[in-house]
Structures are given as structure tokens and as C-alpha cells.
Image (cartoon, rainbow, N blue to C red; front, side, top):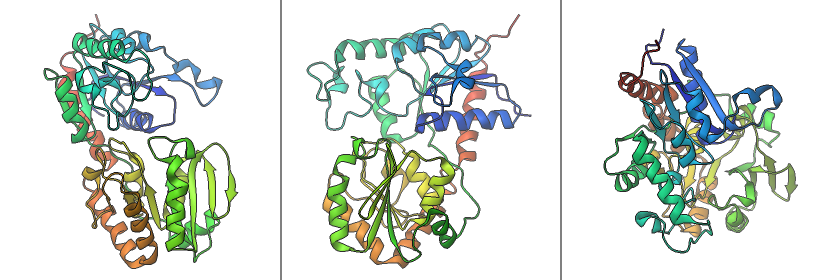
Length: 373
């Protein structure tokens, strides 16, 4: 039986998104170890039967009693959520993006105003950014949670904003299989021709995914097609299923289907313009799928260029398209990099390692909890 203290884990969504995936992974791992864990969220996706766990941001404290460690992953309102656990003896926040540091945005891109409190007009048009930034930062100072970042990149920014706060780094982890279905079987299931050259693009929102360059993907795709005319693409994460020439658009798919797509594909193209420690990169590595992604945020902490992935410089769109095309043309090299990603990640980015790291932190914080009378 696990010796972790009782914990309440909170996220904004019920099932979707990277923050919820990590929150759910921790909750389910604790339950498997017969630990005392509860889970709450603010927005339901799976139907009325699960709505008992719905929670307004300010009401997290009511679900997380003083005898529980409260672990926050995401919320619609950081100031209200932290205010709800003010006075709680033990609080922990995992930083999945920049939102706790800014006046609204999840990724500041080239904007540096977050460093001085988001004063002035917001380049992304968020309203009242200065006031909202003060609310969020004031809540952190009052509650004094331990902050955990999956990447050293975001941890450095958090330490700059909150120099008196305990900031840790625990990289994300995903299930790391010991074996895989064959590529031929994956292609049969996904209805992909065995001789196809398949590029996978994944972004929540599809062509509307701003930070993932969804709107620029078709321009990138034209460059890839010019170099590899026979190439095909699965674009996953849009609103509906449809085929447009050699591009097949898919809506959100479950994890099992996504893993099948990754085994069937030749390359994952991930032209994100801002990221922390994306799960899709780790999942591709776990499936031996070579990934080409801009070296933004924590991505250089996940992959070594030319060994476990391809990491072109941020904004070098021609380089990204050329590296995708190169891997399509050189399958032996692609297989080697895919295998390199698998081996690189299996000691660094497994779910078991991530859970063990959090459990150590939970145990340390458990001493602050109040014993029920």
C-alpha cells in the first residue's frame, strides 16, 4: 500500500488536454497503489453521470479538506482557485504553461511584458492584463504553494517572477510500452496503404490551433509535397473528419487511436511556436516515431537533435519542412532516430518515473497536513 498522504487533484477539464492527462495519470496511479486520492474538475466532457466532480475555481478548498494535500494543475481562474485554498496547510501547483505568471495568456511568444507584470497593451488582446497579473501573483504570494514545472525552461521563468517560492522540476511522463504492434498492422487498422509516406500533424483545434501553427500548416505541407509528391498527411485535432486531397482531417481521437496513428506514420511534424514539455512529443518517442519540432520552450530538453528527434531553430519553416521531407526520403535514418527517441525517453520520460518523483514530493509536503480530530 502506498504511503503517500491523502491528496486532492484538480484540473480544469474532465478528460482532455495535457494538464488533465498528467493530473489523471497521477490520480489513477495513486488509486492503483491504494492511496487516498480524489479528483475534481471545472468543465465536464463525458456526460451527466460524471458531473458530481464539477467544481468552481473558488470552491477547490471545500473539496480539499485540511487533511489533504491539494495539487492544482489548471483552472479557469488562478486567483480564485488559489484563494479557495488560502490557509490550506499544503498546496502544490504544476505549471503546464505560463498562465500563472501572466495576465491571461498561456504562452507569451515574443512578448516580454510578463517580466514586469503585463503592463501596457497586450499583443494577444487579453483585457486588463496588468490587474489580472497582479491578482494571480498576489494569490501565489499569499498561499505560497510549491510550484512544479515539467521543464527547466519554465522553471527559470517562475523563479524570476517568484524568487521566494519553492520551484521544482519534474518532467512529464507517459506510458512507455515494452513492445509495439507492427507498423504493417497499425497501417491496416488505420487504413493506410502499406507503401504510403505518412506525416502526422497533431494539434487541438487543427487549423485553428494558433500556438501549434495550425494556420500555417498547409503552407508547410505544400513545401513537403513539393519535395515528396507521394506524401500523405493525417491532421488530427480538428472539428470533423474530412479528406482534402492527400490530407485527411481527423477530430479529437482517443489515446489508443492516436498510438495506432503514431505507429502507422513515418514522421510527426510538430511546428509549435510555444510549448512547455508537450506530451505529444513524448508519446511519439514512446512509439518510435521520429519527431520534427521547433526548439522552443522545453522541447530541446526532450529531444537531442539528430539522435532522438529533429529540432530546427524556431521559426525556420523551410528547415522544418526540409527535415520532414528528408526523413520521408530516408526511412532507414527515420527508423534510427525513432529508435533513438524511444531509448532516450525510456529512462527519462516514463509515467512510472514521473509518478515516483511526485510521490517523493507528496511525502515531503505531507508533514504539513492537519490530522482530523
